Image (tube, rainbow, N blue to C red; front, top):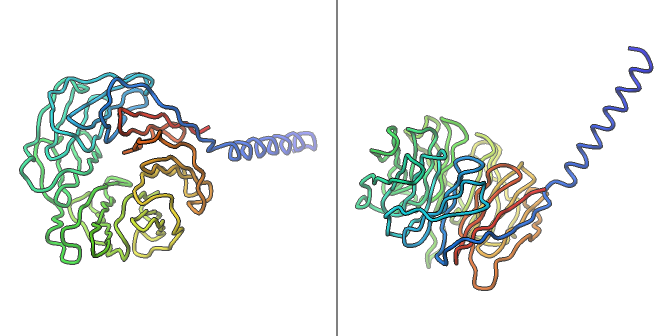
Length: 324
């Protein structure tokens, strides 16, 4: 390599490094804008099948759909009348939504069928599909389907967990097809207790990680080893060994009940019932980006990618979250 070529290479690397540094510096400028939706009912959850098609569910069975990346939303005439708690759009056309019963559609919400789970114990608090056929719901512990939601098998019975009897498991996440986590807890007059169970075999068997903390209200695993939890005591904890051991990150999280989105281990977006925050230092400090109008309430948040997400809430609220 001659001197001229070497000099050009050094300059190119320097320019790349500056561009990367500027990108990192500017990243996480968060802006939130509300979208007008034709309802005054409360939305409870939101999910996108792709970057363009998404769904929101809520009280009295309301279901809304967007086909233009969240810019406009229209009501679906589903015939569902009970209030809905959660929704999972596995694809643009395959959608699942639930409260006590599980409803499923394979044609983008035009038609819906039920799974016959209405009289089987507790309500359904979360839905997570790994493929068009394999999925999980948090109901009386954890149930699994391998036929697209037609039939369900109880793979983890929370009533038989002697250490955490009557726990509500309300959030499911898989980092791959084999390893997944389900978390929750309970809070009552005598205190608060939280727990996470983990599977290593695709959800057929689950082990309790025996958490020693209050009710877990949100969590996220970056991979099978590195994860974070938020709890009722407004604490944030992290693990680097798959949940065997936990280290306290912060005891001053903005609220007890949150949703979280991790861009990486340092850059985090946090939704509380009343605000949206972000952190650039792994959760030690938080910057408020948005507050709902007086009397408002945020219920759920989902990101389509690392730069675009949506939150929903009471009074027909849907908000677009942009990270620039």
